[in-house]
Length: 86
Image (cartoon, rainbow, N blue to C red; front, side, top):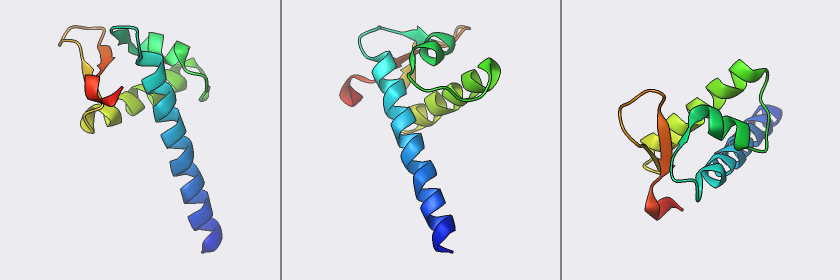
């Protein structure tokens, strides 16, 4: 049971680090598309498609928590940090 807990904590710690990287990639850029953010982060997750999907999921989670916002409803989606979160 302890091994599962340690594994879960490690996964959460890694996700938090990746969210920080995404916020750093958005800082000072105005607004960026998901693909620009995915290219700018310092970590890699799977192939290009998987990586883009993972970064999009992180951006959606950050949006739900009020840390990033979409620039508008246009496609492709452009993301920008909320001023208080930077």
